[in-house]
Length: 114
Length: 115
Image 1 (spheres, rainbow over the protein chains, first blue to last red):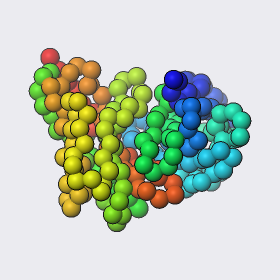
Image 2 (tube, helix red, strand yellow; image 1 turned 180 degrees about the vertical axis):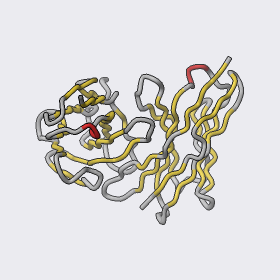
Image 3 (cartoon, chains in turn cyan, orange; image 1 turned 90 degrees about the horizontal axis):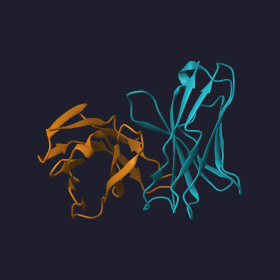
């Protein structure tokens, strides 16, 4: 009974490159959330998706960041033209339903920008 | 917008003792959910305990229990019989029951369990 799977665990990019972070939710879960954790801070909500739909992207920067959760395959968080300030741990969480079901987290992807 | 405040950046407790971590929140909602998550050095986010606001009974999970005071908007976590493996960052989180149900986290309390 696999949990939420995120890959890669660590990702190193140079400024200006693209970063792609992947998240496969737990079996039976159709709701995916992305959070960002800056060093020594709590997690901050970025975006909430259901299959093929973005439900809430109020926490995501308007430029360079995008997210998708296709009908088949994992959810992808994409960061274009990365900058040093994008260095953080990015966590994905999934739930069976919204609201009354707890969110289960993956181990996170630590993104480092050189 | 909801806010979650954890006023204790760091706490220390001796093994086998009891420690309480504080959390307050602000919301205009009447029904919502509150959570405590644990983040050990491995960086995993592990759900410790969950409380539904409409339930008056405080949630309990083995050595972990909460003191939920709805009127005061307070949600503290009590860890009994502390173990070395409890050493971690502890985050309090809030979720409403609306469309998004995103989690709003506090800044965390770093708990160190010592011998």
